[in-house]
Amino acid sequence: MDENPTLLKSTTRHIRIFAAELDQDGDLVPSNQVLTLDVDPDNELNWNEDALQKVYRKFDELVEAYSGADLTNYNLRRIGSELEHFVRSLLQKGEISYNLSARVTNYSLGLPQVAFEDKPS
Image (cartoon, rainbow, N blue to C red; front, side, top):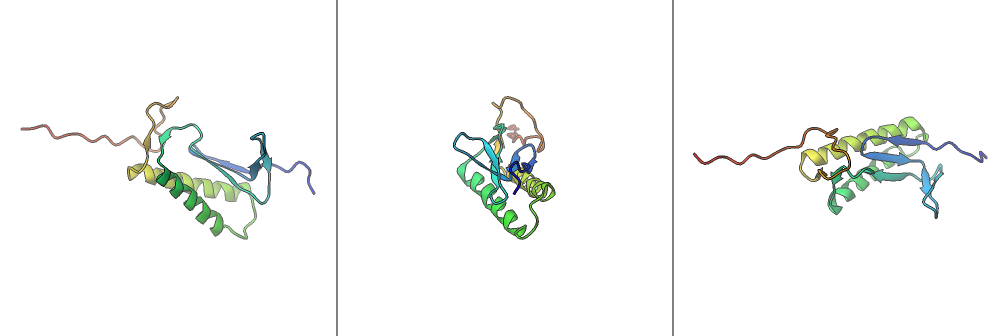
């Protein structure tokens, strides 16, 4: 058995997936049995519990769809990319929004939608 297994991972702007589990000190320990999901690690988006749970459910669905496939960086990147697109869809539907107080404002999922009020005639 490999004593120092390679940490498999997928990182997109708002989704990070690691083939690892967190130890008591909060460090990632590579694992072939556990996937750890980190959603929006830079807090660029405003989340509510319902939207966050949707991302977790979508993650579970995607992992289940890959059940039986080899655990590879490629497969993790495919799941990560699909989740990133899912996050974009939540933003486009208005279920989440950009965090304008974030350390860096980056409209990587598209420009924010601004509602204009009609001016009275």
